[in-house]
Amino acid sequence: MSLSFILYREEIEGEIDKVRRALSQNEVSKEYRGYAWSHVPVPPHLRLGVAFSDVAYTYCPTMRYLFLKRQHVPRRETREAVRGRIVHDCILGLLKEAIDMSSTSKPKDLDIFNSLGVSREHIRKKAVTDINGAIQEAILSEDDAEQFIELADKILNYEYAMLVARVGYKISHTPRTTREGLMDEALPIVIEPSINAQSMGFSDQLTPDFIYTKTRAIGELKTGTQVPANRVAIAGYALACEYTQKIPIDVGFVLYVPDQQRHKVPIYEIDVFPVSNEYREAFIQKRNQSLNLIASGVEPPVCNECHPGDCRIYGRVDGG
Ligand code: SF4
Image (cartoon, rainbow, N blue to C red; front, side):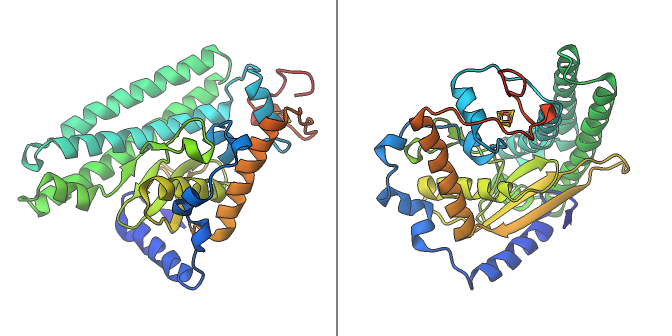
């Protein structure tokens, strides 16, 4: 479905409720909950640690990427990675700023129009610097750069308008509201919380993009087309969240920002789904496969269908 704005609880919560109702007929088994992992420790030979993103978002069909990365083969930036970063920084950056200012100022003193306007300019400046750097490194063409700046402006202007309207409306409608009340009503979301899941076999902190604490849903922001692997990645975040916070996460969502040139406002799509046994099992298998590969030390073969635009290692070693 299309989604007009990440904070429209009415839209997103409706979808989450539908999924939760469907899930009640097909419960997540106890052994697939992250909090059950304390009874199922990672086998010692798998305690090597792997970056969460290399398990969750690996695109390499033979897992050669993971092997070469551990050998410190230099990686390069791709056009898609730059685009993803710009979109990510603009949407999450502005949301974070709105959350920070709303949680630290009294609602009656909060000048959301001006303060968030200043933040928008900072984020835009950072995006332009990032884009110019990518031109200098020949990752982006001048045409790409123009397109990406236009996309950053489109997202920032839209998100700014939606956020100031959302926060401004809540203050105007409930002038006596507290900081907590404002956060609860206007910004009921946690952005990029840090989850330490080393004992699950990961070497780094996990940072899912969104957690809706009230509805116990976890989500990520992605550019490009919808792929089932993203649902499996969300299952990994849900397991880690359950493991560390001991609360069940039943619903996942991925907010997609597809290629868009025809509209003057950003178009978002959302995939909301149950974090089922099937996705949890698929994630655990991927994790074990990655850790087994590292433990084995055997170099995986090259995939013959690789493409330079898809891989950050392509062309850096013989055979890709
Ligand atoms: S070029 Fe292909 S086989 Fe090599 S690391 Fe990249 S995706 Fe994997």
